[in-house]
Image (cartoon, rainbow, N blue to C red; front, side, top):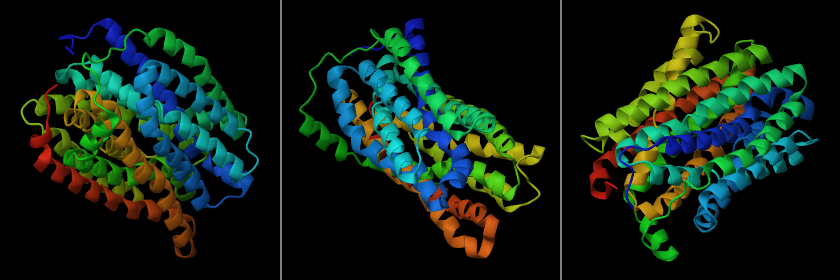
Length: 419
């Protein structure tokens, strides 16, 4: 397959539609974080139960369905799969607003995970087909803006709806909006999907080929370990603001939403542009840039969490959290691009699904849950400050993630492909 030297406006328009779908993905995924406190009060839940809902309840089915969904997408078409997945996860989000118990809310989160499993891997694969290697990291970085935009908007509008009405209406409004957008996406994106000219290899050989790739495993493990604290912070920081800094629901949602929006956009776009520039000289830049950013996250977050002088709602603390959020999301463009450079073009959707399986099972599945468990354990000694301390201890996962990406840098040149 040949790539366009300069992608045209139709390709960029398709990327924008995929970005909007990804925004809905993270709105629906992260809205639970800002609604955690009113849900906890009404349903009488513990931090561990909330962390399980925010992580494992979603991640278990997401990872279970992700690889089969990527394989099905190649048969039915990636655009069709993405549109159908958007309907499923959005409807499940709306259904969460009807929950009367922890179990029913968990079933709703299962539905969100099942739907979202069919969205991200096909989207990343489609983008890598549409954009040439020289533009791929920045294109995937633009797509990855769905993380801060979706998370920030979900937190801000979720908090606004919950404060104005209640948490049930927040789930219903954001969920039904996604259902309405699905046909718009399908009509706008169909026709942009292109298949490789050669026939795909047998599934068994493709699975063996991808599973035997050392670079893929090191990259995935590095992203997974850092995502334990990354997802933990994304889920629990609004609650830390409310418990330790005495913020209201509205001020916590607005402040954290802005932090995610501004910091995330800067970090993701900056990481993608820097990786395309430095990666042209050495492929190792695609993993070393995120590794350095992970290490810088520790003092940036630690100063706010451990030093009372850096309250989140003061200028210095707010600015520092924007820097920390930017550093924490630098990895998304470079790591995803590097993943697609170490496998054959026909294996990209499968590699993305395997990558998402590992990162979501480890990072999303255990991040918020582990932080909640530690918080419950520390509550006997730290009372309301237990959650803040639990999140602070979790910053050590950034070191583990950086070490894995550094190890990947030593191996990367052997597996690198230029297509």
